[in-house]
Image 1 (cartoon, each protein chain N blue to C red):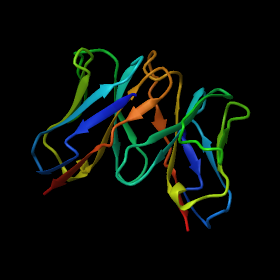
Image 2: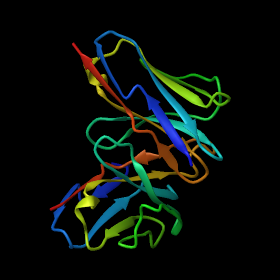
Image 3: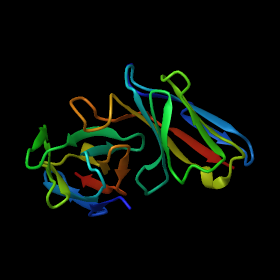
Length: 109
Length: 118
């Protein structure tokens, strides 16, 4: 059965800290891995990764995929209180996205 | 606004009543997905459409649930004889094609419909 596992489940940091969120996956016919940010409402798209070793970057956020070891990481540098959210990782096979349970990040001033 | 649109945003219904939700995907997106999310969990797949064809349904989608996408544009999700366990956020997403197969095939989500069954 396809599954996506995220760790840690919860993370509490102070503003300015750097965090690394982990995502491992077992997805048949794997096509891509996606990261989303969820703040009370619908998930907001962050990154889509299809190739190993190519870092994607957007401001203070970056992500990379390792298709050999079946994992991805999401890095956030110089965290801000606005980064507080649930970060969801999802693997896509040919048909659908399979989500992990998410990592809840809380950033305190 | 050219994003995914869902209506209504909130729905409170009595147990046993039928409810219907609507999703308008991003224009020209031929894939449309329905997910359900409960507190503390990631979204769970329910079903998806390629144009008007419903290609896969999850085991979570009991016979009380039905989804349609009659003209390959908007979609509806109906729940008959609602139960308290149906209370959740129902999310719709769309993509230009199979996610990850080519450029610009990310899946984007709507704001969701929060269902409360009392």
